[in-house]
Image (cartoon, rainbow, N blue to C red; front, side, top):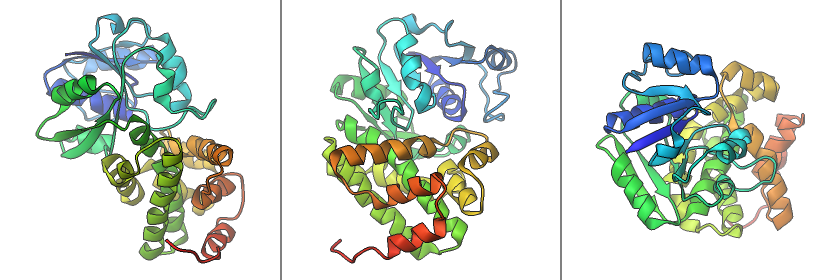
Length: 318
């Protein structure tokens, strides 16, 4: 398979490595020409996953990448850049989106920005650092094109990277976006030292929020109990590698959202997604108390007060 991976961040780098390990012809396309040059010359990404061996992977800029000759174009760029990037891609090759977020300009799921191309979404508990280290994981590919999803499954699945197929494109992509917002809240619990019981409560009620809003958007409720939902949510909320969890923790310690993102040094998608989810919930009339609280903190409200207000809500049935 001829694959172009658009995006030279951690996830794009790890996915390019993964495809190379499966024997595919891989090009990684970077926005920065200097980064592409360094990868081509050294076989390593100078900015992300520096120890990952990228030998045998071609590297170039997005504009110069052989997209028209590709069998698949995997897009791993921040959600805020996704629409512009996919609009610039020539040819008709299928797009596999690796980005976990919503379009901040419209609130739409990212696959809706791809246009007439065939599209699939890969999501689930997929920390780039662990994948590039050769550690096992399980993930899911979703598409309304069953043949495309199954073909990609066959080309990507391995003994270390197990791929399941799911027809719920909306649900799988929605999970990947919403779980980052709950992870910010879970990190806030860590930062305040509120304990594992409180954190488990936030995560569990977070699943309820994700399911309510996703179902209202046409997703299948059972998707939120699978790899893209509960699986990705758990690892994002508990692992030290979780950027969104770490950002929530730093904010609880007194950092501004911008300072937290700067310290982490990589994109923290939950910071972009939280207000988009809140606005969507308002349009649909869906109650999202945790998401509302996260947005309140991002806008400068006291995390201690918001935690107290969540606990003080009127008791109700689960």
